[in-house]
Amino acid sequence: MTKKKVIFICIHNSARSQMAEAWLKHLAGDKYEVYSAGLEPGKLNPTVVQAMSLEGIDISKNETNSVNEFIDGHIKFDYVITVCDETSAEKCPFFPGQVNRLHWGFKDPSAIPGNSDNKLKETIIIRNKIKDRIEQFLKL
Image (tube, rainbow, N blue to C red; front, side, top):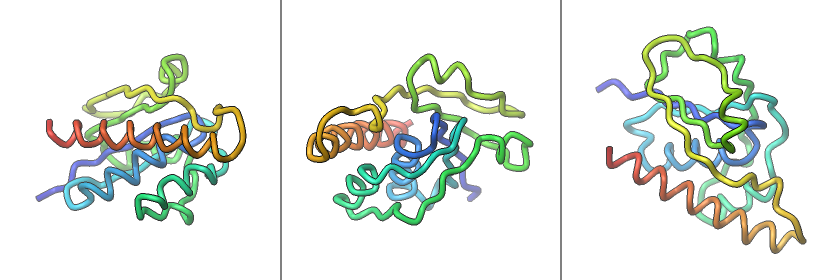
């Protein structure tokens, strides 16, 4: 059985797309080949790393990737899923080939105000929403 190929795209590939990639790998890595990338790759968000580790998923060694690494079509994606806000989703590049494009909007963990406890609490909420959406996706 050939694995379906999925890429999650966000602005910095530091939070939402990293969580989505990790969840899909964790829940269905036997059925999906999963990637994530950002329009302007940044640094992995440490609060996101902590939130995922609370679920037993270690993303601390993940790298942030640029969407430009994937545009050339060397990987034929079955799904291109944006996980940023509506404005940012419109900036996502064209991917060659027949592909299913989905948009799942989630709040940006790096924009959460307050102290580290509040940031973690809010990031956990986003993490759980992403997990729920992945679980819905797997039922398709």
